Amino acid sequence: MSVRQDDPEGKAQLSAFLEALAALGWIVDRNLRMDIRWGGGDVSRTRTFAKELVALQPDVILTQGTPGTAALQPETRTIPIVFVVVADPVGPGFVSSISRPGGNITGFINSEASLGAKMLELLTEIAPRLKRVAMIFNSDTAPGRGTYYFRDFEAAARRSKLEPIAADARSDAEIETVVTSLRGEPRGGIVVTPDYFMLNHSQQIISQAARNNVPTIYPWKSTVIRQGGLLSYGPDLVDIVRRSAPYVDKILRGTNPADLPVQVPIRFEVAVNVKTASVLGLTVPTSIVVRAEEVIE
Figure 1 (cartoon, rainbow, N blue to C red):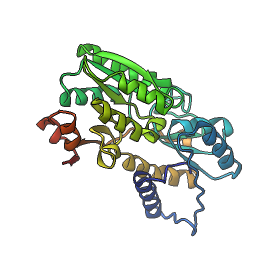
Figure 2: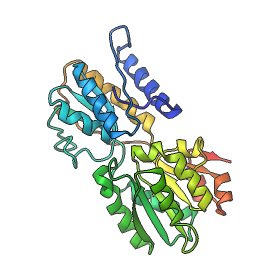
Figure 3: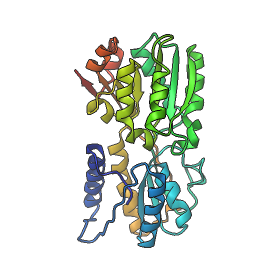
Figure 4: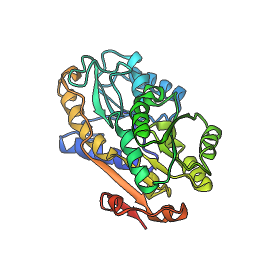
């Protein structure tokens, strides 16, 4: 198993998965052994852990995110792999198609390419004076090296007469450069891609966005609830991980992963931090408040 368990969100995901497995009759240390690795967004470490997990010859591997799935794929064509929180499994060749995976890998995507456009729409609702918006990603870890979400985002920005910017950032220094380039006039904002590097460096983005007065939207509600980010829109990750348990159960009972279609997310969440909005000189519109699962006053 390759999932994040070192923060509250990761612990909630792991707990939901274990509870769902238990409901299906699988109890850790009773009739199930589970080994866990967490790469922390480090591509090299993730590859090392992938080799370690495959060497254990498990009956199934659950992996979270595109980097982990990409690291596991070349290591085995026979051990079943169930991925969660992968954006585009077809592009990198994890599966042949969504409906017919066709190999030893299947799983649960976390979003479709249109997510960036939806995030942009919400960001412009709370910050209507924006003239330029950057989509920030790490090309080493983002789906399609950053292009997967950017195409729809770019089209949506141009329809709204905004300048779209592709911002590749692979270090804290590069994140700072992106954010500071957007301060002042014309007013700039940021859409953060669902990218494990960005998740692990979210506090740096939040701090720089506050320091430079740059409205920013994130794909993870934890950035708003626990870290003081302005706004988030994204899938319910706990629900996605929970839903993977029946697939693991089916595989443990003999089902071929090639026969299990890739599943799409069914729950999305909005969170907004009113205090952060006030500091940025923004007013949270009623349209966002009524849609938000979490409103931080």
